[in-house]
Length: 245
Image 1 (tube, helix red, strand yellow):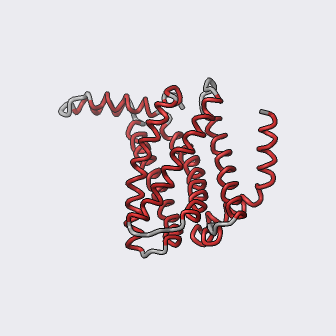
Image 2 (cartoon, rainbow, N blue to C red):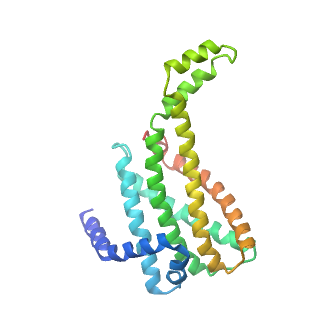
Image 3 (tube, rainbow, N blue to C red):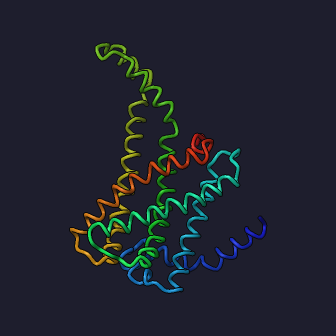
């Protein structure tokens, strides 16, 4: 383990400056950045792969820190590796398939390099969004219990409803914040997909109409893959899936 930590530290030190430069360039202009960074050669492959590895190390380290202390580290690492291979592969296949459906054939090697950046920045966004959402949803079980209590009150019993809101003055605000959190989460994810899609459209060399059709296909496939990933988590490690946050 000590040797692994030393190797990880050496890798981070060697690639940190390039990572920061690539992160800023990609975040500020994905289409322009990927135009050159996705040209397939050994240097660009090393840059893209190291970018992905650094983000994966940081994101997974954060994820491990917020999990309950009784989780088995070896089992968690095994899950992360299996998840990355299976579902990142499925997402890449869905991305390529979405272009093939509309008759486009972007070079798979260039798509792979672009995908490594796309999934990396997406993971960073997910971490920030997840922390924000979890801060809002922290009392979710309590709010859901209050909602069940409210639903049990007969609609015609206005006095009981008034008494409920007087006894729970923060219920309405908490309910609206939960709804707002989910809406913002989905909209920001969608916005990031739209921004990055322009870069993939340039690689596919298609017009806006076919690009939009491919985007719709990818969006549908993504919503098929997502519940599969949740089911995979449940089957692979039920205690992780049920762990309180």
